[in-house]
Each structure stands twice: as C-alpha cells, then as structure tokens.
View 1 (tube, rainbow, N blue to C red):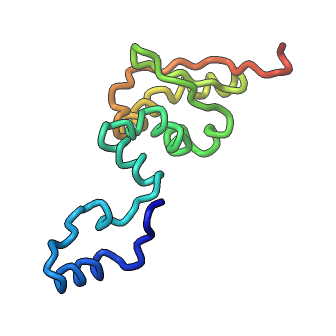
View 2: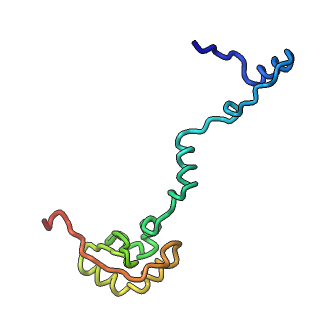
View 3: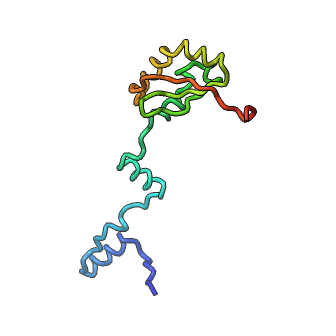
Length: 132
C-alpha cells in the first residue's frame, strides 16, 4: 500500500530542513500538469504537422477569391500535382463566367500565402444526385 502524502513538497522540504535531511529535488511534481489537448498540439507543432495547406486557405477565403455571388455557385475541389486548381460549378453558365474571370481568379489566388504556385484552373461540371 502506497502511503498518502499529507503535506505538499514545500512543507515536506521545510520539515526536512528542520530535521537536517536533504530536500526533495525531483522536478516531477513542480510542473503544473498540462491537458492532453495542449500536449498533442505542442507535439504536432514541434514536428510541423500543424501546417496550413493551400486547400485550407482557398476554402477559408473562397468568397474573396471568386466573389460573393460566384462563391455560392461553385466550389474548389482540389489542387492537382501540376499545380492546377479544380473548381466545380453547378451549371454551364457559371462555368463560362468563371472561364471569363480566370485570370482575375488566378491573381486573387496568388495573393494568399502558399497559393502562389497555382498555375492553372480547370472548371468541371458538378455531378448532382439527380443526374444519376
């Protein structure tokens, strides 16, 4: 059976000093315990796992990239290995409008961090559940 410590470390060290014994110097109890979430986040940050990807930046800033009206009618899907952004649109009219604004969209994209490498945009039709 493990004996329960009644006094804190400071009191035990004070009693040890009074009795002429060496103080308890272990650092295991001096640090305040961290939550598991904080510990995991610290480790992820240390090993560069917490890194904002271009896809996340594009999704977060989508309305400012294509405009408020267009953002409701299309959405970014992914970035291919050849630095091409794939955008799905809901109909042909929206696709043609996006095609007209392609250079402006590319300029807007390149203003965001980690998005300067995007060299092209492809516009694809959105496959709805009704079409199947």
